Length: 311
Image 1 (cartoon, rainbow, N blue to C red):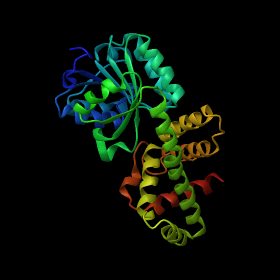
Image 2 (image 1 turned 180 degrees about the horizontal axis):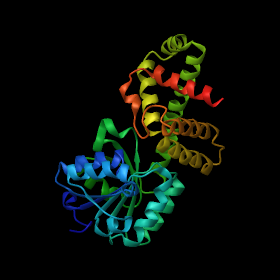
Image 3 (image 1 turned 90 degrees about the horizontal axis):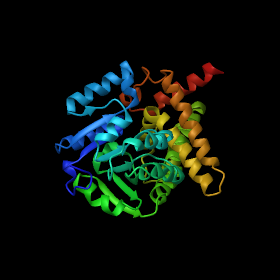
Image 4 (image 1 turned 120 degrees about the horizontal axis):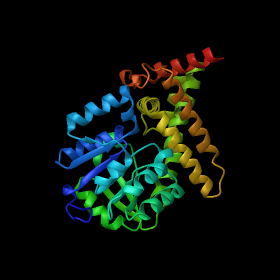
């Protein structure tokens, strides 16, 4: 069955990146008995790769040995890696991509990066479509709001809907969907970094209750305790990926001719938290220890303690 089939449940689907996003998509697609293969560079690691292999075995996902191996057998490829790897993944898959195979770029990369990746895939006979994921995936899973862009977007959109995606066409012009995503991320990722910085600093001065009360008065529709806890959790768990995404956001701002002062600061704050997580500050390395604590103050105190120790 080729990627020109109008029956997407008969496709061989390949996932490049078997992290949180890849595993969620695999689970939801396998429930429909769709054939799934996956590749992730972490499969080379005994520790991280073991968990991925266990998940694949549980859900009936075939694991491949390389990008090229995955591309050669896939009618539809989803690239869901870190932002900095969006173009390198397209470059690695392009030589082996099947003629007419779809390549959906899920990555939070700048419009310029998406255009470079598209040239690689389309140049080898594949069909590149950019996908801009418009909110956090876990609550929505495969039904997460998704904007599509590119010449093939209108053709691919209804096929994705058949598979359970909430896909809508943003534009036939590459980069438009990504621009929407990137501009939104200036705000959303910036709010995450701002809340962590503001709440942790307030905690240091012992004024967090007064600050939260003031925020509630100004923005009564937001539960700042709950929202703060969620922002801390997401950044502690995904700060490395988020910092890379925001560097792409900064590049998007540069491409528009502006200096990305806010985006650069957000990227640095996200990376700072990621560094602390990698050092095991929030629990064992590679774990999301915050998920076991509902109080952001616990994590703020750990951050302050680390800052004090580092001088």
